[in-house]
Amino acid sequence: MRGKPRIPALVPALLPVLLLLLLPLSLSSAGTAAAAEGKPAVTLSSSQAGTGGSITVSGTGWRSRTLLMLLVCGQATPARGVVGGTNSCANADGRAVTTDADGRFSRALPVTDPPVPCPCVVHVATATGAKAQADAVFQVAGHPVEPLPAQTAGGRLTVLTDTRLDGSGSLLTWFGAPPSRTLAFTIGNVGTAAVENPVFQVGTAHGVFSPQWDERQWHGTLGPGEKARVELPVELTAGAHGDYTVSLKYGGKVLAEQPWGVGRPWGVTLFWILLCVVVPAAVFRIGMAVVDRVRPRHAARRPLPAPGHGRRRRTAMAPPRPAPPTSNATLPWFTPDTGPGPAGRLSAPHEDHPTSPTTPTIPGRKGST
Image (cartoon, rainbow, N blue to C red; front, side):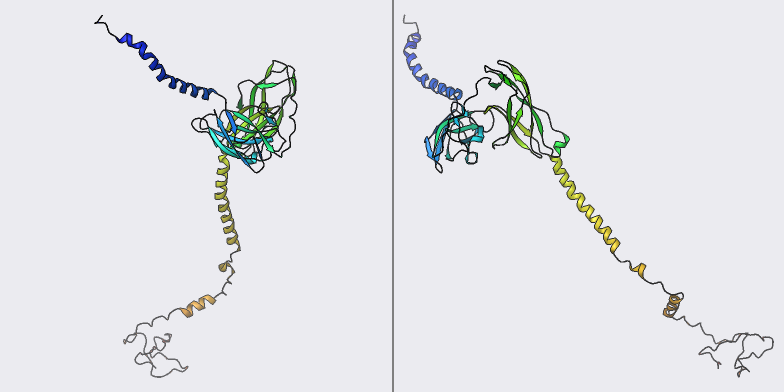
């Protein structure tokens, strides 16, 4: 007996101590899992306030690092939600907040009269990513209160799965044409009556702004328990680009949302660059042509000189010719006479040269008269 180990006997004594040490860890992990699996919740610092005041909105159970929008909405209850959508909310005085790593937030919200009567709520919804929302009952002091519109009995439509945007851009879209897509989804009738020619509302929102709704009617009849594939056109304004969200609403309730990234129309930028290069070059060419045509031509308008006028002017302006070289030697065919001839001209002394030319008097020559 002395040689047997005593370790098995110590296990029952240490088991309670191990359980006490592991219990806080298990409770902490269970609480974290419950917070992750729980629904988002919203609490208010006050359930009633007047216009011009403010309240503090706090939330738990949201996704971490998520952008949320806080709005005061009328015609809404936590059970039915906001009946008229964000059109029933004071969108201009809403606030945005980002949750922390634990999915919590706290933000001051100014109190403003919603565009429709109460009952009112503080509506908190995700601005990006997967859709999540929560409402807290709130009363705007002094704002009128009216009962909610009655729910329509009979057919009730819901979006099942496979919601997507079909289509792609074109060359015209690259140059600023309105981008367009087709919102395709499968819808089912979960009510007790048939739905004939339902009218949907398709909204497009840019970033965190409220969607702009347009009505789209689907022609057909959907009986109880039936489903059908629906395709509705979606179009943005010319030159639109950036991150958009396409929403589908029926009966005052948002059924689906689909993100849509629209590329920048670079063709418009290229057009303006070419315009800034081509237009100045064309204006310069036109201006030079006009200047060349209007500019006076002096060479063409100068009168032509009279015949011979220019020659005489050039002769007068020409430098004098140098005198021929002089020589003291007497020319062999010329002998100067001692006196003038009968006609005042020098005559030759020899008979064998009767027609000798008369030599002009050369200044400085010896023997000249």
